[in-house]
Length: 328
Ligand SMILES: NC(=O)C1=CN([C@@H]2O[C@H](COP(=O)(O)OP(=O)(O)OC[C@H]3O[C@@H](n4cnc5c(N)ncnc54)[C@H](O)[C@@H]3O)[C@@H](O)[C@H]2O)C=CC1
Ligand SMILES: O=C([O-])CC(=O)C(=O)O
Image 1 (cartoon, protein in one colour):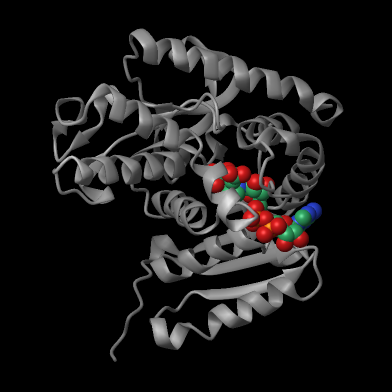
Image 2: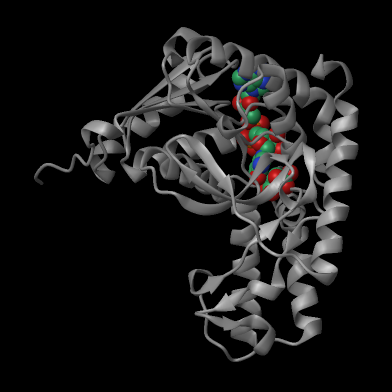
């Protein structure tokens, strides 16, 4: 079968994934499949679950040809020491009928405690926050650790943009323009919530052709609405929230860091005046490379999209206000 190792000396990356549930296990699995990391440590509080999932993944390595070591541990942060990236998925998922924001109280305690423990053992790590409500959890992780803002990144925009591309491709196909989600370019910014995320219709394209030239206003409004409630739709179908696309999206962020890819990806980061905002974390396009986020990319927002982004910022601030004592 030959040597399939793809590690370069400078890409000997160690990744910790906190939470070995649906999303965390998927992140670990996709990171291993992508073959850029030397080691993935999966950690959970449930006895045996991380160990079992890691063992199951390692037993894929022959069939799927990867050399990453996946290790599972229960509560043993020493095993996570010197990780380059820590992905935080620990916490409750929502059930059908709930909003992500309803998870704020219970997940704030979990996220604060795991970030503090992980940081003790991996003082140089970049943190990727997944737990919901993600924008508030990213803000909490940043404020409670005092880390520089480039090392605390929330994942939501990558996933919401994938859903936007998916729904755009469906609408394009129905209108007689053959398209797969990967033929479509589209970005979602703002908060990761059902009501105020901002799919940027004005700059979405099918292989360079503006979708506004191919789809009616009514169809585009429907695509936007489906994108916004994409997570709730899946939660209704599954009885718990989604994991395949969330896991793949998080692994893609880890990969961009590992390979110093300098990819432009919408992520939730702390703003210091960009987009006219400060003192909160919300989704905007950033350049992602080995130092974490290297810069915020400015998209000139106009008209309705600008107003919608401002609404989204206000919604994110309102959830941050509920963090209360967790921020102390
Ligand atoms: N940002 C995003 O785009 C997305 C966020 N999510 C969020 O990710 C989180 C995880 O979702 P799922 O994996 O589906 O849930 P899950 O219930 O399948 O897994 C969560 C895991 O976290 C573990 N956990 C709880 N407290 C812990 C602690 N203190 N330390 C370590 N592990 C702990 C649990 O034992 C469980 O195994 C939820 O908050 C969900 O809302 C889910 C999908 C997308
Ligand atoms: O919908 C949820 O609660 C989980 C999530 O954030 C997503 O899938 O977008």
